[in-house]
Image (cartoon, rainbow, N blue to C red):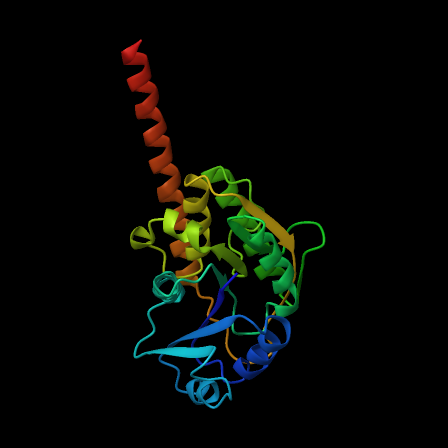
Length: 248
């Protein structure tokens, strides 16, 4: 299964080399695409200095910070155009252990459409987050699950494997979320498309180096979009019921 690992970056010079080393160890046959948004700390030069750069390692350099969602959608389009069979999402900040990736890819090979590395199923955990952030993450996932009818424990998870056929079934051009709400939107759209989704437990570790990209605006965007989608679903369901009753 030809695999592309996508790594969005913005000022991740303290972490990117260690992550690439981990990917080399655990998935040596996978290609890696770094999508860098306006880093000024040397992230790009570190990637370009790798011995496998220009081969299985590539970089897309963008002049402005366009957001996580835009970076992934751009990379998904490149992956599909290049004929990859699977695409991996992984954070650059070492929160996601590449050692879990072989198991996740094995599930994708068994025709699971979306494999999610989950913090909130038995065996999964979060290390290093303050209690407030852990509560916010758990509450956000619970709200998304209830509002959108998702039987997913960690819809905001950023460690994933998508089969290429799955990405073709999702209307990537219609994806709106730019921040971490992107993960919820992709989950929502995958469920709507009838995709199979499996969660596997991972240990998520808070970044040690570099600055977090989380902000109040990102949280608000996710909350508002989830609410908007839930209201839209309710209106659609009401119209269908009305049409059914009128038909009777």
